Each structure stands twice: as C-alpha cells, then as structure tokens.
Image (cartoon, rainbow over all chains, first blue to last red; front, side, top):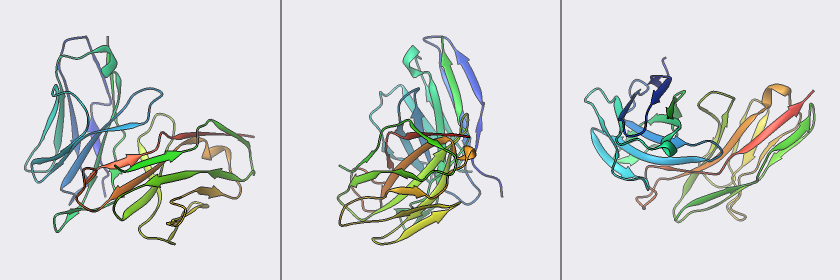
Length: 116
Length: 116
C-alpha cells in the first residue's frame, strides 16, 4: 500500500512569490495535516483538513492557506513568501472515525522549500 | 493547553549502549502518546505508540510505557546501533474536542548520535 506522497521534493522560490505544495494521503484516509519544520526547530502545526473542510489551524498568518479536494488530496499555498518560510513542509494523513480524529498520523517525506 | 517536553540533545552514545530519552506531557483530556523517528533527509516515521495508561509500546527494540501518574512516556533501547542515529520526537494526540483537537503536540525532538 502506498504511503503519503508529497510533491515536489524540493522547491526554490524568491521572496514575494507564491508556493504550492501538494500531498496525497494514504488510500482510505480522509484527514490531511500540514506541518512546518524549520531548521533547528521542531514541528509546527499548520492546518488540518477533513472531508474537504478546514478543521483546525495553527498559529500562522493568513498567507498560509490550503484546500482539500474531493479525492482527499490537499494543497498548501504560501503567498508573499518570506525568507523565514524556508523549511521542510510535512504532510500527514489519518482516518477520522465518527467525527473524532483518529490518533495515528502517517507522514510523507516532505517538501523542502527554499526562499531566496 | 496540551504540551510535550522532551530532553534536549544531542545525545551521543557508543554502539551497544543503553538509550533513554525522557518525555513528559501535560494534557487536559485522555491523550494517546507516540514516538516518531526522523532519519536524515526523511520525513517522520511512527516508531511506537500507547493509547492508555500503563500501555507499553514497542518496536525495533525500542520501548516506552505510558505512565499517567508521572505524565511520562520515556523511550528506551537496551543496545543501540549506528543505524539508530536519528532525531526522535515525542508527541501526543488528544481525542477530545479541545483547542488541540486534531493536531499533534510534538516535543522539540532529540538528536541521537551513535558512534561505532
């Protein structure tokens, strides 16, 4: 069974541009989570999508946004890129049963974004 | 809110040494607890988990016991190998609808370096 996949693996942008990152969850998983892992820092929760809706959001500015498609894949968009947005962006997926988040999240390999 | 605290690294060990990484948590609900491992250049992999008090998670020689009385979930391995060199993250997931619902709380990560 295929795991969580992310594309692209690496992305180079300049300050002020927009970046789009993509994630495909494990087959059967309806929830997708996005995390930012900046160098030397831990994982910071960005967004949680389930059944096409945003369910929870971390402490990030509105220029970080995303969406989830009917096939449960997801996009993360970062507008007006800043140098400090350079990081590894990780996507995870999980099941949601009876409206409650299933506990185990399975992670993709990440997209490394570099903002110059 | 929920939080996870784990010991700072790096932790440097010789091969076949005993490894302990301390992890303590605070939670308002009934969390599940996890250890994830991140090898260089990769995403996070689930190492083990425990869903209720006194449960012991184990995998690949690693063990951790969910101790509600001390709010801890320390990771141990009796004899480490060079291939265990990685960053280890302790995390919790609260299944109750709180402001942390649907997102993991990760510790800052502990880098482990095992030398031959």
